[in-house]
Length: 375
Image (cartoon, rainbow, N blue to C red; front, side, top):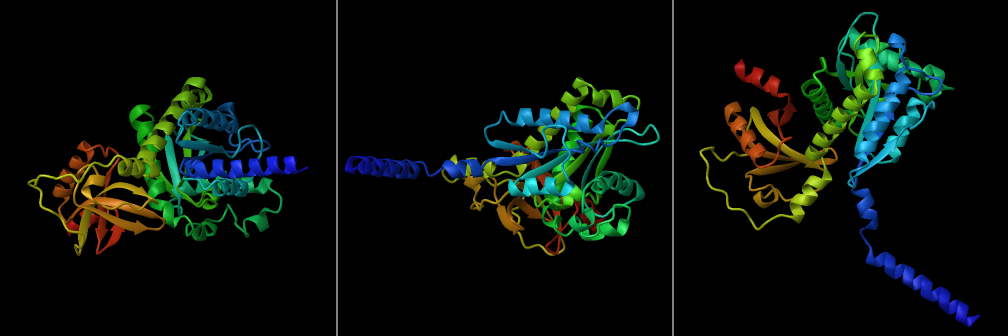
């Protein structure tokens, strides 16, 4: 009896020591970039049937191809809301993403119209800017009528009422910038790499986006009702191409908004870099009026904004925005000067950096900033 008790004690102590010797086990899993992939519709909800094709099947095929490629990356964890032909309520899709503590939520769909409309468009959550956006959202949201007790689940939301969407945007406001950034990457890949017609980045009140607490987009990959796009999206070739483009956009985004970017910078940081003075003035971060900056990266990781952590770039400013720290290079009221700084950042390796603008410390679009200066 004593011998057995001793063996148990030794095993317990061994287990504790092994756990203590591997403190990064949980951290490694947590630090992965988590992408939740959502194939629109499914099961008893076929989606649209434009051109005689089934949206639910095409969306699932594209999603599985995206996932298969992303899963090759050890730094990315992929979670599916569905990986087969099953019906998943919209509310449950958001819960899957939230429970996974996802960094991104991507929902893939196909469009349809009673004309030969064509092209791709990527939506972020927002108030319908026009009747066309509302009709797209209404069609995708109408799936709730297939769910039991939808009036209770969605607190009286009515897909047929534009007013129902006005209160939907509050929870996603914190992630709107990142959602728009991802949507822009997606549309650029479709337009530049695949030469698809670009219908732009848009806002509309999609329930599935409203349910998530992370940057989220809904991608309309094209029109099944179009005589060219329908067969293209129904083909293995077309689905592979769409998946490749979306994977490329996710990677571009993750390089711009990713823990790994700053982890690697900090880990491989050289001694303090001495930067030669350039013919660009040293910019301060306390301008009143219009200020332009270059956003390098954003992360939940707090890193010292010194030049050695940012490939020799200086000055770099760190600002907390929501749950993220954003790292900006330069600050100037001159658009031409910020363009020079942007080029400098890109030559240092920040290929996905981009310009942002502020007015009296409040973020505005670059276009609005330029219009304001032109007055």
